[in-house]
Image (cartoon, rainbow, N blue to C red; front, side):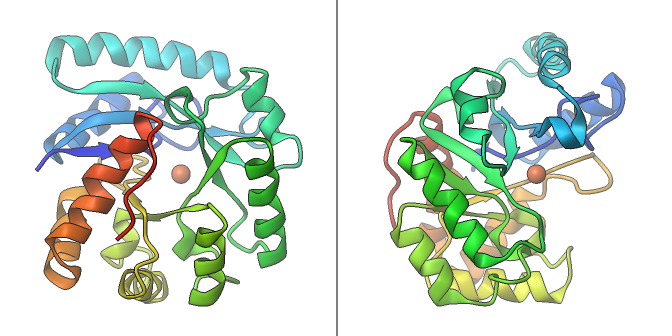
Length: 243
Ligand SMILES: [Fe+2]
């Protein structure tokens, strides 16, 4: 099984991902070993948190492209960002300061883990009304909404894409987020699984293991939809299949 990953911090010297070129290469080695063949690099973007990092991301991406073309010619790279929500963030995409996912209509967006539900609704609505489709990062990690399946269902029905982290499914971030993932799968609310990988040792990719877990507990078709077909459809700016 070959995977597409739409959310990771593999580019070095951009955010809280790898600090050196060598660490970036080790993470990409792990990503390749984890059977990922389409990789959209998504450094955090919010000038208030990580500075204006778009030029650093450009440089890291160029270095990574060289490395990959020599070592892993069948691994395809794409550009993206994980935008921290802020009232003006859609303008950042429109002005080309940062990337939507592979420059499609899909925007990977995150909020503070402690954010109120009404801010998440207002924020995702503002992205939708600007003509983009929000891919809400690691929904299981927002403390105030992650147990509320009706709330997540409403977000989804409103057009928000629900993404969960591979390591949350496996319980790496604790029992609470694992249980939320499980409930979201049981209620058929998950659209995309992504690695959110930050390093080869701490927060590694783990998508193959998550795929196996989903396949075992929720069926092969659902596992393929969220780990393979939907992420690839987003890269191609297509509509998603619903489970
Ligand atoms: Fe992330």
